[in-house]
Image (tube, rainbow, N blue to C red; front, side, top):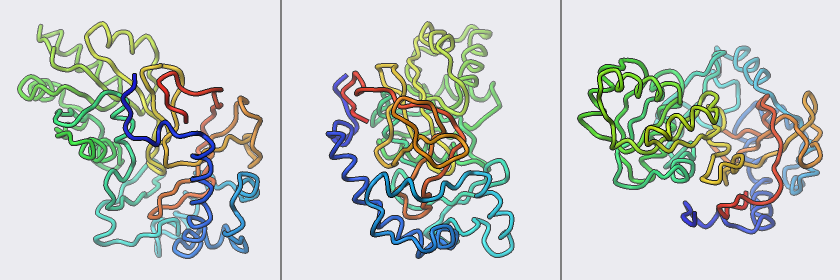
Length: 310
C-alpha cells in the first residue's frame, strides 16, 4: 500500500518528535491559562521548560478516575471539572457523556476527533456513502465517525444502533460501500441479511471500534466480502491509533504524544515493555496533559510495513 492520508504519516520519526515537542510548551501554557483544572494540577510549572520527554515525565499523570472526581466535585459550577478551555455556546456545538458520567465537549474544528486518518487507512474515500452504526446519543462515537467521514468527502447515513430490520432495508435501498460501528453489530446485520436470503454485495469495507475485534471475526467478515479494520479512540482524546493493511499492531495518530508508563506511576517504561498508555493531546479546546487511559500496551519496534513511520 502506498496510499497515505497525508505526508505526515511518512515523516522521519525524529522530525515528528521535534514537531510534537516544539508544540508542547504552548499547549501546556494554554491549558494552564484557560482550563482551571490544569492551572491547579500544573501550578508552578514553567511551561517553556517542558521541551523534552524527560521534562514531560516529571509532570503528574492525571487518570480518568481523577478527571471524573473533579467533574463530580464541580458539577454546580463547571460540568467539565475545569478541564475544558471552551464554554457553552457557538464554539461548543455538542456535549457528550461517557459512563461515569464524564462529560466531554465537542469543538467546531473540521474532523474534530481526527478520525479521517483511520477511515482513510481502512479504504474509505470521497464520494462514498458510509452506513454509520455508532450511537448518536449520549456518547460521541457517532459524531466522531461522521465528522471524519465528512472530512474525507463521504456522505453518511446516521443509522445508530438497533432496529435491525429497518437498518437492513436502508442498506438495501441506499447501497452504501462502507460501514462504521462495532464489529458485533455488523455481524448481526449480515446474519439478518442471510436469514432473509438477502445479498449485500455493495458493502465492501468497514472501520470498527468500541470492542474486541478478534482475527476470527475479521476472517468471518472477509469471507462475506468485507475488509474490516479497527481503530482505538476514546471520548476524551479522539483517535489514538489505527490499523493498516499490514495488520501488524496499530499506527499512532499524528495529533497525540504517547508515553507508556509503569502502571500506578508516571515513570516511562523501557521501549517494548508493557505499561499503561498515557496521552498528551494537542487539542486546544480540551487539553489533556499526561492523561492516563488505564489501558495496557507496548511499542512495537520498527516502522509499519505500509511505510507509515509512527
